[in-house]
Each structure stands twice: as C-alpha cells, then as structure tokens.
Length: 304
Image 1 (cartoon, rainbow, N blue to C red):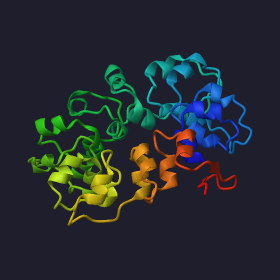
Image 2: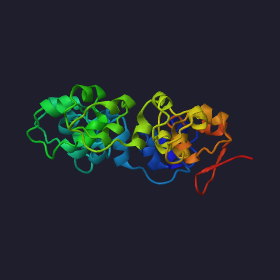
Image 3: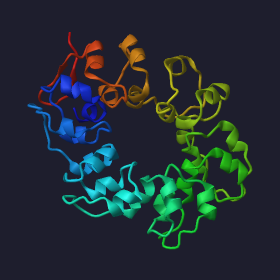
Image 4: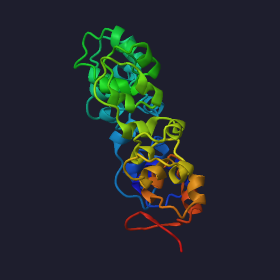
C-alpha cells in the first residue's frame, strides 16, 4: 500500500479513509497537505515522516504554517526552497540542519545566479535540472565546494548546448540519460567527451520513432520498458533483432496508459508497478477488477 499511498490523489484518501493507507507513503506524496495529515485514517499503518513531508509538500504551505515540526533536511530537497526561506523565515519547531548538497541540487538555478557567494556545492549543482553550460562556464562561485561533475551536467543540460559547445568534456554516459537525446546526437563530434554511449539509457530516453527507424541497433528492452513513449505495438510487433535483455513489466506498468492496461488485462502487468503509476486511483484499481486489498500484505487481490 506504500506505493499506492505515495502516488494516489488526496481526494481518494478523503473518500476512502478506512483503507490501509501507509503514512510513510502519503508523506512522500507530492500532493500531501496538512488537512490530510490531520484526517483520521483508522486503518493506516506506519507513522508520518516530517522529513518526507517537508520534501514533498507545497512550499507555500510551509510559509503559511511556519510553526509545524518541519525538517530542514527535507526542506533542503524541496524544489520550492528559496534563499529567502532559508535565511529569513522563522521555523521555531524545525528539526535538523540545512544541507547545501541537497539545496544545490534542487533549488531554482536563478537563486544560484542571484546569490553566487553562498556555499553552493558544484558537484550537486551538476545534478540540478536547471544547470546549463552558461552557469558552469560564466558564473563565479567563490565559496563553492567540490568540482563540476560532467556526467550529471550532461544528463540535464539542453542538447542545444552540446551542439553549440562540442569541445566541453561531455560524458556520453550522462548524455545517454538526457531526456532530450536523439539517435542523431551520437554522430556529433565531441572530441573531449568521456565514456561510452549507454544503450540501456538511450533506449529509455530517445523517441520511439528513433527506435522504429533504427530497429537493428542494439537497443535494450529493459531500457525501452522505461521509455515514456512505449506502447503495446512496439512491445508486441516491432522486430528488434539485436535487442538485449527482457521486457520489464513492472516498469512498463508504471508508465503505460491505464486505459490500455484495463483493455488488455491478459498481459503480465505488475500490480506494484501499477500502484506507482502517476494516474493511479482507487476507482481505477477497482475498474481493473482489483476490488479488495489484502489486510495483511496490503497488495491487490483479484476478484474472481
């Protein structure tokens, strides 16, 4: 039930308070609110994790309710965190300390540009989704610790920058994880690039059209199982003569359209994967024929 609790809509929790919700899972839900925390969940398991709540809750709730037992460690990983909150918002009951590793990885990159003299961590900034070669090359961070990590930068930098600055020390493994990578990018001349292209990661990130048009390449079915464009037609009908590994039905179940799953219940879908689907809801689960939850293991039981 933890997987379902971490992804389910909060109105399902309100609608079905008697289900065996997992409070740790709910704490990790991006839609968690203080109202849900105060809701009576008579069959809930585990305890609330204020570190996870602090990480996932909308930061505006923290600002409007500063007197809760927020966790500074969790807030350090909250994507809404700002320097103003760190230095100016009084959090009298907050626990722990601020972690600049996590802050550097999650804060909006404009905050780094605005306050370059703070104790930023270059290694963690390399994993920030807003990182760009402009930040790396031009922004002076006089008090920053560690060096830049080009594997992480390569994963998040816009591919247009890779094309514009081919001489930078890009990581081919990192570029393979870039969600904007295309098969054509493998032909770029990157004289200072390190490592090798990773076909598992490429399979997970390139457009499906690239795979269909280049079916003889050594794609990975394990990677394709995580591709956000994966569809049954590719799984069942596309001939991939040099593909490696097996299909991962858990990963496929996490991203496949739920209506497709419902219409093809004869396939080996993974219930834990479906439980982690971003669109999962209790009504969806019931529409698929799983109308009860095992009170011991909190896994799905199919009604016969």
